[in-house]
Image (cartoon, rainbow, N blue to C red; front, side, top):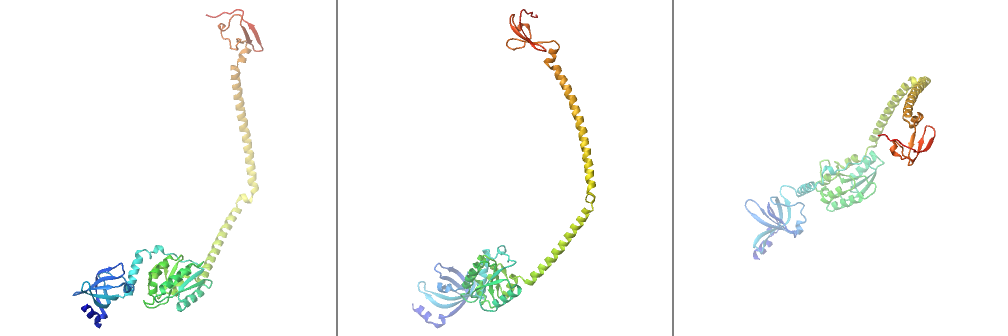
Length: 390
């Protein structure tokens, strides 16, 4: 306790800057940070409590050279010197720059900046949302350029803080608000130039995610042409300045009028060539004999029809005569095979009482009644006698 009071009461040790390399780094679940800083000759155990660790603008890690500010004390349980760090900055590189690079690598690894996720800007936006400070040269420039390029485009301002600790949350709220407005085709978010600290609100992780979640394309226009922020990488398009963003989004009325005039001239030229081709074709058709002397064509077709009718009649007559001759031949053959023809030559057909044809004398008995079919008429007779051939 005595040594601890000596160290804590020493004004020189109550406010000390220490520089060294981090080792044995551990970020406890309680939010406290435990680590050691060392150089070529010595090492010092350090602790940064959660209240101070929450203010860090970068993520410490083993092997990182840091600059610490705090006080020296004794940890009674171990009886060891210990440094209570209240502030920490990277040594040799600014904390803001390191935080920027770490956040950029993190979001890039998630695919938040992938080109495949970028959406094209609308060709003719009807309503443009502006997320920026309500006062300042940036807003005045954007309004002026928009009116000059295309007065018919409507602008909707969602005012937001663009600098300071509260700026990121304000920008996110404004972006979400303007995105819910109907008929918004594209959003421009940005501010004029400034230092890295002035533009730091646009290096916020939540703002980057809000830009990607916006339902319409977002153009980031932060600072000057050489300034790049996390918002620039997350947006669908980056403009070098707010004025450049308006020129990128708002079409030029004069340029559009020039394109319309060019298209009109092309349409007139194409139409004239088409009409001329149709006129030449009509002239060629009008000079064809069938149109000059249509009666001659009709007479030829009529003569051809008469010839076809005559040929059809001749062919039909010949075919009918051939079929008549064939029919006569078939009739003669049929008549020769007919039983009636046999009966006409004096033959007859005898049938027994059951109607069967009598082909031999053995088929009937003496006294049986038989019917005899003649060429003309029939007879009913009774068998008086019969002679059977052996």
